[in-house]
Length: 342
Ligand code: PHE
Image 1 (tube, rainbow, N blue to C red):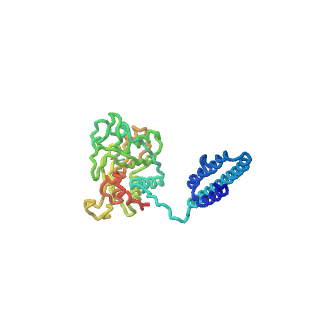
Image 2: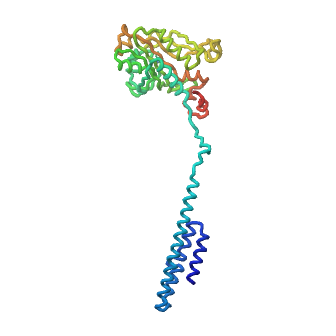
Image 3: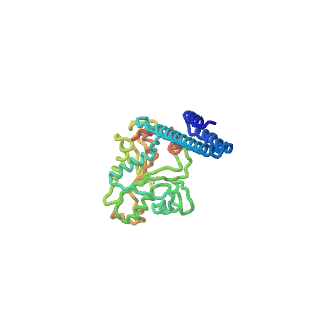
């Protein structure tokens, strides 16, 4: 083939090549071992020595020119690729963002946060205790010796005769008293509790309580009432009232059950409050002298009160939830309803 023609043809083909793949397919046709230029070389053996020399030089020149042409084209295509990529990767900051499905705060967590906010603002500290407890802390030191009939009030998950899943948050009272060794105390302790209950609309084998314990000089039942009235107003609304009814707990004396004015009828009487105008929300009382003594406190020096709020109970009243199982079934439709709360 004519030498000049080869270059002309390469130029033409290269101008039509639009990708590196085209280039890779084209290159061996001219510069490969069996390509057009190598072919010319192999034709040289038919020439005289003189001719060979000039022809050889010409072919070499053509080869270099061809290589340069390919190199330039390759560079050009690479540059094009990079700028295309850059153009594609430009971030348009005015584009609307991708919407993520954000979760919402679980209503029980919200209640705990509200309780913590309220009580810490009143000087309480938030205490913690283990869910796996000893019989001693969960019962004995709370004035519930083995065989005491009041143990029947709480069906318990025992791990072995000494260890159990706590049936109440009250053992945190014991733990705190033993730790503070006779000094004043002002704590709440929200946490999980367990009882061997059959799950239904109002029972759950796992539920939550918020314990409260205040010990100091001259603490009275009036202080207890104030602490609980504030809670009722904060969680259930400013218009709420509470009343204390005599009750029994082995670890408090006197003991009370605390009712709040009905969230539905406001106290007039309706089906929800069985026409009484009141709804029971928690147990409380003045810490029993026996408990104080067993936990290292002198009842003549220091007294106080304790309470145990049912977290599910007040949350159900707050939002009008009628089945406790909703809290634990992880139904997204239930949970989504609480998105807008605070
Ligand atoms: N622990 C009691 C219960 O679970 C509630 C309570 C707590 C009562 C503190 C009095 C004082 O029923």
